[in-house]
Figure 1 (cartoon, rainbow, N blue to C red):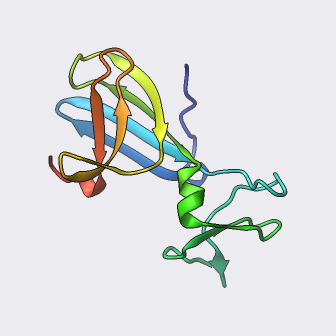
Figure 2 (cartoon, rainbow, N blue to C red):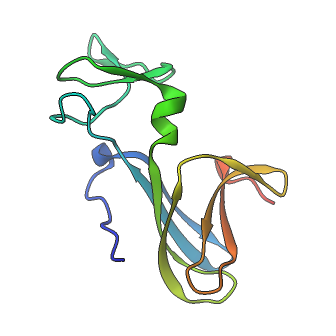
Figure 3 (cartoon, rainbow, N blue to C red):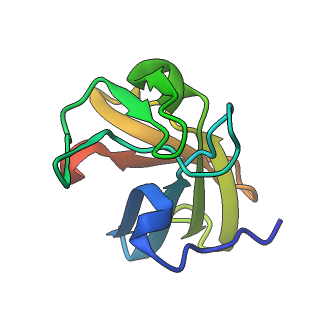
Length: 128
């Protein structure tokens, strides 16, 4: 599979590097290329040099194309490189960039490619 680890945070919409039960999980989501002009990466709108972090849409800085936050984020994929806490093997996997409830906690869920156990990436590092 050989996933490409991002060189900079500017390439990512989401990035996480955490330890779960003596195992490492590195997860990221690359920013999407504009579907209209295909020249720039889409991001939150910038007004007077400041990024509007609470904006409900993503815009292209080149052509000005906008997409709603929900539909934009559902079209992205989360990529992860990990050491599985269940079987101890290293692996790489992808999942949809959608939070699901795992044991009562909102989480991105990555599945181990070896033992097929779920590895949750919880919101705000909450315990399960």
